[in-house]
Amino acid sequence: MHLLLLDIDGTLLRVHGAGASAIEKAIASVTGQPISTDGISFSGRTDPNILRDVVRENGLVPRPALMEEITATYTEAARNTIVEADVERLPGTDELLSLLSKRDDIYLALVTGNVEPVAYQKLRAVGFAHHFSVGAFGSDHATRSKLPGLAMRRATENTGHAFSMANTMVIGDTTKDIECAREAGAHSGVVATGHPSSSDLAALNPDLLLDTFEPPELTIERILSIFC
Image (cartoon, rainbow, N blue to C red):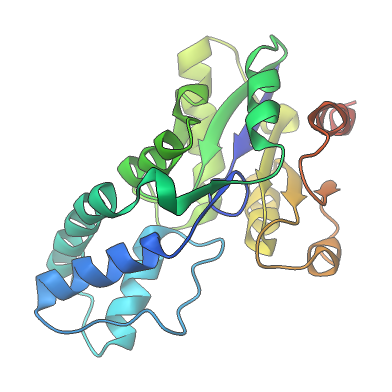
């Protein structure tokens, strides 16, 4: 059995502005000052690192107690801010996940920089949450390369199948996803639906590079060919 560890933002779906709004509202609520996320990169990063950078860029000191309160407030704000109307399914994702979930040679899990409740909030908004029983999240570790190993262990515990990095692929949409997979020892797959261009992704020589997940049947064939 093969393990596919999927990213969320830019890979499966796109949230139109609601994520940044939730961060700004959360930090402003905790600190009592106006907050801007202008100039902060969100792509391919974990929520804890994004929150820390926003705090610093707004002239504040990211002390542990402050960051813990901000993270909890952000999680609650995201639940109220990120709704179905703000979230877009990316091309081919619905059919791809449906097809993959029916196979007995593939197991789906998450590797995402989102904190866990926010990850599932986004997935529920587009009807994808039921495809993913386990994963690893920004709330588990701020360093993204630590997440595939944790997700693999959780998948093993959940299924009883002894997964290894040799039969695991991390699928995302940024150069950071390629780096994350390599550091973890997994296969790397990327889809050019996020911010980096296809040529930027190709420059890092991922094991699999897709323009989109369409057509889903061909995407599955290409994924499986990497494990041969």
